[in-house]
Image (cartoon, rainbow, N blue to C red; front, side):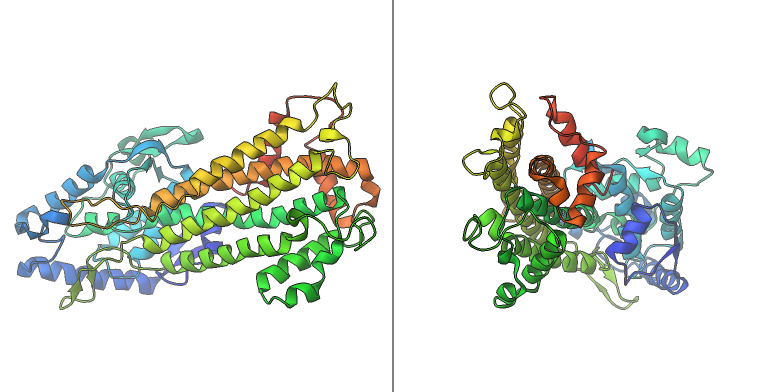
Length: 494
């Protein structure tokens, strides 16, 4: 059981809730903050105070006053009109993560919602009722309005939710089946549910989880390649990396040494060659720089998942502040940065694949690792596929955050495009994982040609584990199936 309290939520806790389906509960002190915040909002409505989104319209219509008798209709109209998402739905795990993050933000006690709102979110999460949320349509400020509106639709008994076996169902039918009453939104509640960055941040968090594992996997896969090409292990000497001073670089070098410990396939300076090509020699420097990116991204995500990102924020009945915490620029930047960091892991991997299959570069291995070069093509077109994926990544790595299109009659005249950045980062991670899958297949074959008994104990264990799923290249076959099987083995989120 994970207790949510509006602060201190970690990526590891979100993984437990969203990947392992661990249930949640609400911290009593957080619920009390929610109650106090709600009292403040009700006091403002009773007094007829002019407060954005409570007694006024939204965006450019913020100067239009709303009568007290219409505040509920205002919130309902907001959700329905803003549910303009398009395209394929986010995976169910993203929907679940969005709810967890939105709930945690509301529990900070600055949003002015009733306890019923947070309790219903708790129920949805614990009973695995996940809204169907289209992926496209968010500008990333005023937060993720369109995606979060589809989340809010489910809470009011409208829209669609994922049913059994991943199929979609009408929310109203599912709520009746589960004996759950939908919300009737009151003042501020619709706005509090949709003004925030939880769509982009949910995608960003899950991207980070996959990218972190991919970075670790890239090291043992690169180590197999290193053995297959009889790399010069002196390049990983600790003194070399300490001399530069980046802790991430030193950590990669250390892990590479650990993977290669006891290997008879690696070489020393001058035995075969004095030094290797950059894609082998500079693994700690390049992969280490990608780890620097990951560290930056993790820091920003763990701040954001504990932040109050709606507008306005309620600091008691006497102080309600309109601002822009919904602006997704920090997540937009971090996802654009992640795109580059992960794309470089794939770029390095593809260059190592080329060295494995190219008879002019692979130190005596069969051309294209083929069992019968000429008659059989072996891994020739696997390198083509890897080259295609890294080239596609270069287009996806263009930063989304440098673009902005004004909205709401130019009231919202700068937006983050953070959700686009997060979605594109996810695509780059998928492509990069397939590139590394190809490298792994090729590296396993190369080490087998050299003599798997000469591989390091740690890499022999990995080789045997993968060989249970991916057979050796003894005959040309449809390698697409092997690439996809290896990709599944490397995935965190299935």
